[in-house]
Image 1 (cartoon, rainbow, N blue to C red):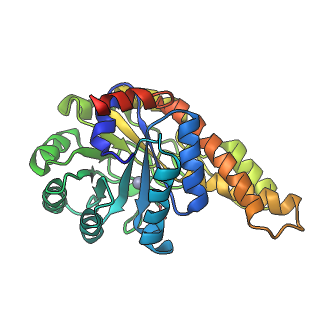
Image 2 (cartoon, protein in one colour):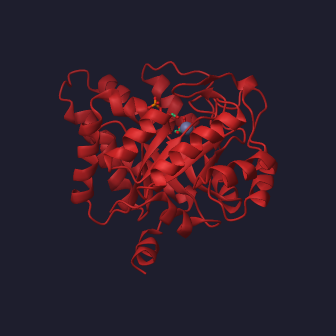
Length: 316
Ligand code: G3H
Ligand code: 13P
Ligand code: ZN
């Protein structure tokens, strides 16, 4: 069942965070649904602009519609990740997305607010909710490249004004994370002090943490042992998700870790079985491993076991 992120956030606020997972293909979608049902968790399926154009957005949407039929117990939101204004309008018009992100965080404060407000007006007219972003993460985003040194943490005072003036439904904040597998170069860490200030100015308002992959050392080591070359990778300690959710974070974005699972499975299969050329061999293992990975993430997020409570809330 597709629901808005707003409903999921009402259930989760202050207690746990909902996992927001990026998907690009059939195997990820199947692993994602299986993993969330395995751990009885509500979830958010995220589609980036790159994912929409990887094959054709209609193919991806069709796969998700079918997964909704194949896994009728699942409760999830369909969300555009890091949308620009044009893509946000396309997703709003499509009637398929329950939530869109407008990411104008690379613009100045006033321009970011003006763009966000236009998208909020268009989305709300159709019952769709909007995530916006204020502050800049380090690392690479789809249409923005930000050096670690230039990453700007969210200003708590601006956050309140931003939300009041745009009417957005949730806010992605920059508190020290970055996208990709190479976070925290030097001695950086999560800025819980900034997060606590933001929560003070915006009590009960859902916050979002991007760039939250953990980039597990053992996963990277297995990839490298199977011929990979990923050096100096570092991520967010999943043990910190709980504290973040107590401070108002209700959505935690994870993409890179899923890509690492994919890379490890495929490298190991082809290393250990050089005779294999049946794509279903690594595909089957990947779906199983990805499902396990999702279930484990949900345990850290606290969304494990929340599915029936959310269902009850939805039918109230
Ligand atoms: O933050 C970006 C996500 O990891 C999506 O990545 O734009 O390569 O699909 P992508
Ligand atoms: P990671 O690169 O840490 O997985 O972050 C993903 C993300 O923020 C997607 O919007
Ligand atoms: Zn992101």
